[in-house]
Image (cartoon, rainbow, N blue to C red; front, side, top):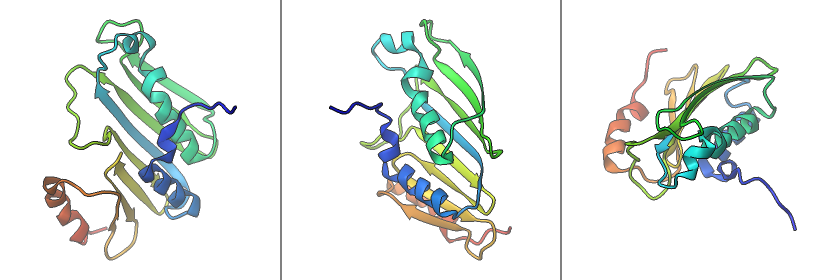
Amino acid sequence: MRLGIGYKMRFEQGFRMAKEMVAQGTMGPLQFLAFNYFQATPPQPWYLESGVLHEILSHIIDLSNWLVAETPLAVFCTTQNFQGGAGEDRAYLTLHYSGGTVATIHGGWLSEYPELPGKQKRNVCFQLVGEKGYIAGVRGLKLFYAKMVTKRPWRSLRLMRWPKSYAAFLMPLSTTNFPL
């Protein structure tokens, strides 16, 4: 029997695509990673007892380490507790890696947090910045890749259908030449 830790986000399509682009050097060496991961407070009271670092942000720490392909040399963390459980309900982390890459992770549980529509969780926003460009994404929606020098800096990597309201909002971004 094999046992493992369930860091399942590594296997989601958007994160796998981002990892492939990092591994191929598409953006150049990674310099900065930023993650935001917020959710509505779970109804089970034990979540607030164990804390957001253990329950959800450990997945983002794992993603960051996986994308950078190393563990951090130093971690700084600030936590908050607004909901009265024994564990923290919000946390803000900075991870420093040996090659100079820095990652920030902000996340937590909010009592009135609205979820984006759709079946798949869309509660992680992220940006990976390299020397030659960056990837920006929302879990389960799309990735955007922008190069530093190009005639059309926005190239969309389609993961799934956007609701029409999001597509209408994003259309000008994918067809406009932005000054660099």
